[in-house]
Amino acid sequence: MAQEKDCFPNCNISWEMVRNERNPLWTRVNISDECRKRIDKKRQEYIDDDKSNWKYLHKVACSYQSGWVENNEGECQAGGPPPCCPVQHWHQETGSWEKFLEICRRVKYARQAELEKIYNECHNAERTPVINSFNNEYDAAVACWRFLKSENAPGNALNDFVTRLNSLHQNFAAAVASDQTAPSLKQGLDLLLVLKDQICDYQIPPQSSKTPVPPKNQSKTGHGSTEHAGNYYELQIDPDGFEKTIKHSPFAKPNDSNSHSKFWDEPSTVKNNSSGMRNNSTNPQSTVSTNLATELKTSSQEMGELLQNKEQNISYQIAIGLQQQASIATTTYEQNTLNIAAGTAVIASGIEDMIRRRQAEKAAAAEQIRQQTEQQELEQRTVNERKAFMNAIPGFSVPSPFSNFKDSTIYIYALGWDEISFSNFTVAVSEPLAVKQLSDGTWPLVSNLTEHYGKQLHFKTVKFLGYFEQTTICEAQQAEIVDQLKELGATIRILTLSVNKQNDDPTKDFWNK
Image (cartoon, rainbow, N blue to C red; front, side):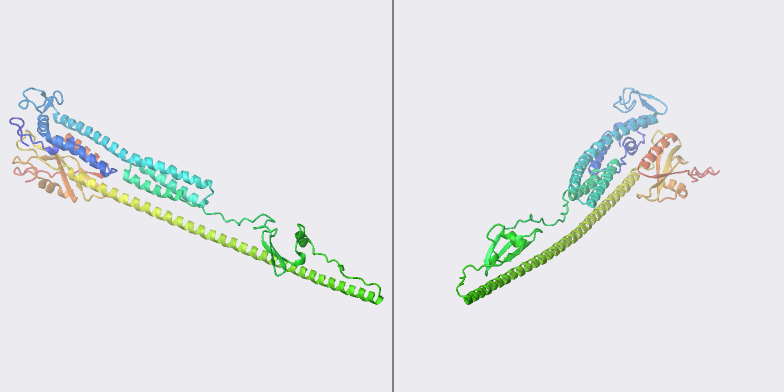
């Protein structure tokens, strides 16, 4: 950047150094894409503000590097003592550079707090509706479960539902407590909605029961009678509830309310009937003949009536036999029907259990896939953030030959790592290293540092950080980087690197060159 004339023209403080001192990194893992966009936008605003104000910031940094301290922080709009500003707002003080770094840290912490506020507002705004919906749907699912319990739903179904409800609730509560993002919580809500529908739509299996029997002595259609082929038929319901058709001979046709009960209670009686037959008693033979005829006629009538009575008894016995056979057949049919119904109920219950098991297996498989997908996304985000952080760390720089830095020693430290993955992220951090100026007045290059320490840094990637004018400044910056690496889950190894000893040849410098 171009400097104003006669205002620290030889200051070599870089934009990258000031930017890194004033702007925080963002290392949170559990953050949605939308919230991340808002955070990144705000961080870019900070950087843009510093860029637009770089001329002023550069003069302030150079003033502090040169041993100046502002009387009242922020009072001097020019950014430095004369000739930068015609008014003297500055004074000389030992440790001025540490004061500048402290100013930068306060800016960084304030910006970090603002980013945290944006994150919390965005994070909670996304999560709260999902959490509220889960609680409401959970209450609805519990209400349906209680209704099923009050309706005597099968115990295995109730136990299955309550176990899955409790499992979902516990997993969701754990996700909320671990600060999971709204999309992650939404997956738990979707699983609850599926389970709630299963509970509320559950059909209680019908209970098997015998078809109600009509009341005793009550015909389905009342007493009905028909005349057919000289016989009288009657449809009745017996005391056991079975239909029966009774055939009566014409002479036994009931004509009053008691005839039916007499037919069932006792056989009909046969009466002698000689009315209508004349009795001629004037002739003994005639009398004998008449008496014989009368006896024969009477006997014939009695025989006829007896035959008819026998026929009636036979019909009665046949009716009783048919009734018993019908009762046996009906009882057998009814028992078979009950057995079939019971078997069907057992089969239906088995199918229902199988469907529930398959539904539970599908839900468990879906939950497992969701967790695996979420874990994979988490691991990938973590790896990306770790790589981005390591790439953003500023590298090695040296004092400009036109700077006011007159010391012959600067301080750096090294970072080394092999790979960056979710399960393996080990970073080696060296102790502060003193680097001396070369005999020709120049400073070593990165290639010189790598060659000098390469045998001790057995890592795929090595990065040197600095320069720092004092050991304390180097240690403070190193501690901050280490804290940020730990937040990213890195395992830290502290290395002590040995420095090659100078030989006695005065033509060789510190690096034996």
